[in-house]
Image 1: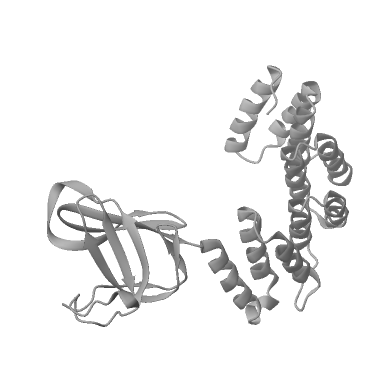
Image 2 (image 1 turned 90 degrees about the vertical axis):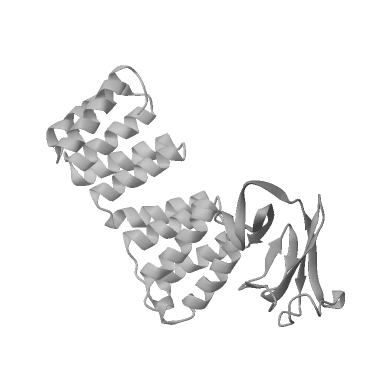
Length: 280
């Protein structure tokens, strides 16, 4: 008859109400149509014999659910698990009492990242870039991600490479500081490979900057000449401009230079689409 307890490693919300990290005694006041779930600061008492309302940390009300199949032995289960919340349920006989727990995952991860970046890991550009990518993917904490991006280039152990410069440009793009992004990429392209030119050109296309994309892809051609990566990129650039004649021209050039059967098969499909006047 020891207390049933529940432990939260971080501050969470239970049924939308905040509760601090810690271990709590878990009690349930049962009703036919309503169950009051009680989280008590007194977690080491013996069963409910010594329960005292003055130790309540949180009370929430939930609706019990009737189960189709009887549960012989009382159990607690995570009946739903998502990225930022889970649903826990007491189940016994034909009754389930579910309650939802929301966790501020993004800020928990950010706090951990900040700790990591003040350790020796903060001197490794690749790890700093991983931290920024987390922010970019979630579209959060962008100002700090910008500072981390700069640190990966100019900080202790920083490296001025195409990858670190492209990452800095991404930070500016996320903050809608396009002139600074373009200026950073102008420097990055001076050390870019043909495939990096093409990849950046396609990013510009997804940003609906077709004119800028074609400018970059033509610069790629001027620098690296008549090779697969260049022609494959120009196919996309001209397609984005609805210049399907030129798009087919460069697609056919790329077809001859394709490094694998898989690449050829992809190009076949793209050429067919372009000849129908459809943007790839």
